[in-house]
Every structure is written in C-alpha cells, then in structure tokens.
Image (cartoon, rainbow, N blue to C red; front, side, top):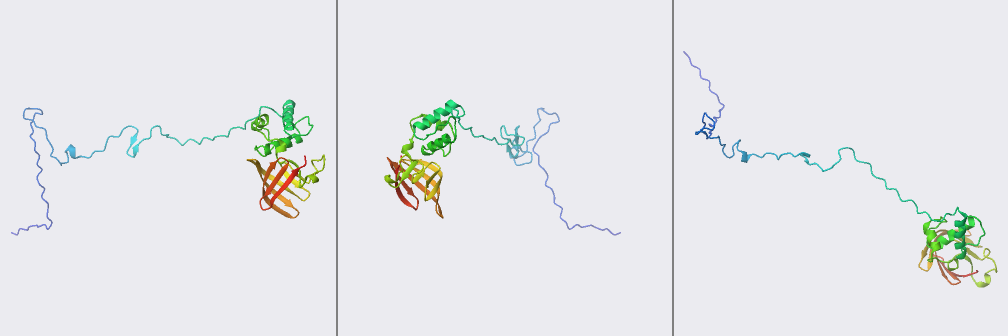
Length: 250
C-alpha cells in the first residue's frame, strides 16, 4: 500500500491568538461582572480614534456657511443717477425776470440792447459776462450765474478784454465800437488782418487764459493767449508770437 503526502511550498502565517483581558459574568451587573476594557492602541480604544468634529447646522465640510449669504443669483448693480442741474429762481421766459437780468447786465456794461424779451443780444451779453467772470463758456442761465450777477463778486465789462482796441489812441474811431482796428468778444478776436476763434476762456488771477485757433492770410495755428488789462491798456501775450499792447477805444 502506497501513501502520498502533499507538501506545500507556500508558508502559511500563523495568527497569534487574540488576548482579551476581561472577565464575564453570565449575569450582567452581578458581583463578579467586569466590563471589557480595550487596551490602549487597539481598534476599540476611544482615546486613539480621530473622529471628525460634529457638523453644525449651516456648516459644511468645506467651511462655515456665510451668515446671510444669498442663495440665489446676485442682485444687479445699483445705478446712481447724477443729480439734476440746479435751476435758477428767475425764469427768463417771464418778461419781468428777463428785464431784471438785462438791467443787471446793462449796469455792468455787458448789454446795450433794447429788447423786450430774452433775445440774441441778451444771450450774447450773458455769454460775455459768464466767460469773463470765471463761469462756464456758454449762455446758459443757471443758479450759479444768477448768484454771481446778483452779488458783488463780479468783473465789470470795462475791466475785461472785451471791446474795441487799437495799437495807439490815435487809431480809435470816435463814437464807434464795431469799426475799431481790433474787436474782441467772448467768441473771437477780429481785425482786418486776421481772426482768432476762442474755444475756451479761463479766469486767472488778474488775467484770462484763452485757447484759440487763429488765421492770418494763409497761416493757421492753435494759440494760447493771455489777456491782462490795466486801466485802458490791454496786453496780448500769445504763445510763440510774442506780446502786443493795445489801447481801449471806448
């Protein structure tokens, strides 16, 4: 009779017996009953376990939820509208108010017309007043213009560069304000030789700085002009063109 033996070449690990230190009493809570106490480092020991912290309401594993955070789509941005322009108390469409403004402009030397309404001569006079008194370069009637015209912080027309001018007093034509060698308004300076159209006027300390486009014959150039007035004398200082002195004809 033959006996065959099967030999394995793979080593089979031998598990160490688990040792549990506890005593068990059939009756739980009896005098000989002892609870099972796991050893430190074992799978069942509470102090060695790293449990995640409890999750509060309104909190996720990504982080605390923002208090009051919107859950829907973001609200559209609020558009801030610029305030409306401040209106003057006087209304130039009313005859009484128009006559008051014309009377003030006449007293300051800017208006010489006889209009019974707010016409083109009145608008031109208002434009001249605003341009030479540090206001906006237009003929718009507003609260700031009204306050300047009604107050005392103003410049009279004879103190400005407006009017008729000549290179010498002998060149002034008696009684004429439109046929003088040089005529200056808030829009332009004009002579027989050429014209400078004004694009901006800025009031400075004792002077005016003017930006213009000048034409003399076939020559054209942008100019920055500084007007200074002392009594009847006007000093015209132009960028790149030198300085000239003129005498007021009226």
